[in-house]
Length: 153
Image 1 (tube, rainbow, N blue to C red):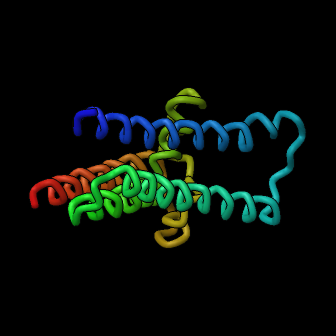
Image 2: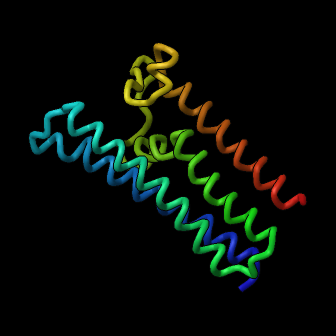
C-alpha cells in the first residue's frame, strides 16, 4: 500500500472516530434528555472523564498500531508520536463539539449561547460558537504545521 493511501486511511480513521464520538455525545446530551435524563455533575463528570479517556486511549492505540505496522525507523516513531499528538490536539480543540452540532444537531448555537461545558468558558468567563470555531481552526492549523514539520525532516 502506498504512503498516500496509508495516510488517507489513517486520516479517515481519525475523522470517523471523531464523528462516532460526537454521535455518542449527541445520544447522551440530546436523545437521552428526551427520555427524562436529568443533568447532574455527578454523572456528567464521570461521563466527561470517560469520554476524554477514550480519545486518549484511541490516540495511543492508533500510534501503536502505526508503529507495529511500520519499518520502525526514526521517522516512523515520529509519525506514531505525531498521530498521538494530533488526536489529542484536535480533541482539546473541540473538533468533536463542532461535529456534534454540524453533523447531528442541525448547526451551531447562536453566539449568545455560552458553551459552559468547555474548560475555556471557565478560564475566560465566556465561550461561544465563534470562539469555538476560531479555536478549532487554530488547532487544525497547528496540526497541519506539525505534519508539515514532521514530513519536512
